Length: 318
Image 1 (cartoon, rainbow, N blue to C red):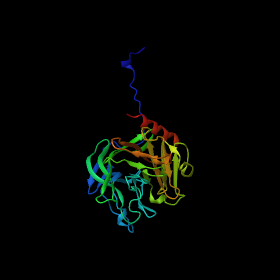
Image 2: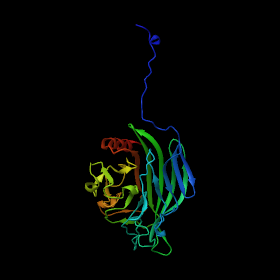
Image 3: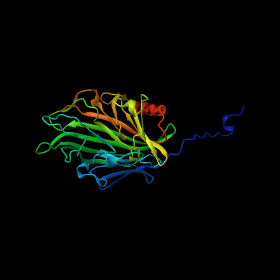
């Protein structure tokens, strides 16, 4: 037998789909932080209110959200200030039916009645970074305008991490979002049972026709069967320039009332992860409300087995 040192060298090559090795860049321009990889856009964080589409009232100008969001193939997956629901904006968080002392601030339908009675407002950018994963930390404040002066209801911190990865053979843009909400004073924010309010996602305007958008939940439900059900993950998508693409929301198992209830809008490409569906609850002083979500943005039709594997990986990560 030849000694090992005399055997021919054998080289094993592991093939994986193309993935960029460059860093994620985070560039702050005016009221926006823009994330990209090798010049290709991934997403924007809109801090202060940005420009509105023509014909949309100024009362709907709000920040504190993510939009636009793109797939690795450069396909837009989010919509913003659409005519049917101009208060919906990319990816955002807001509560709808509330009780705060003697008032009922609505942090979801902001500007719907022509004036801003309550709002989620960007307050401060704590830090922003580029690298193998880019990201930022920021502060928001939930304000009740029904009193004079305005009353702070909640303080919120967003920690967001942006990356691009090949996950079990599929290239995806990955956005990890952690929201931490705390009471701004001694009064709780009571949240009565309601069918929506929480994390919202509005899809590409191309999917506005009811037959142009698809939804899929971890339980195998489509948008009709999945409304008012619970799930570990949910996907929203459709075609952009003839190519299927979309965005999946993975729900962390540490979240309140996991698996969390869903509102899958029957009339437009919009979904909400809505813990208030399960009954009355409250965000109380001294008890932070923490919500964690992973947004997977990828081209192609959703594969339930692949999405389940990605959720398991996300839920198991430290």
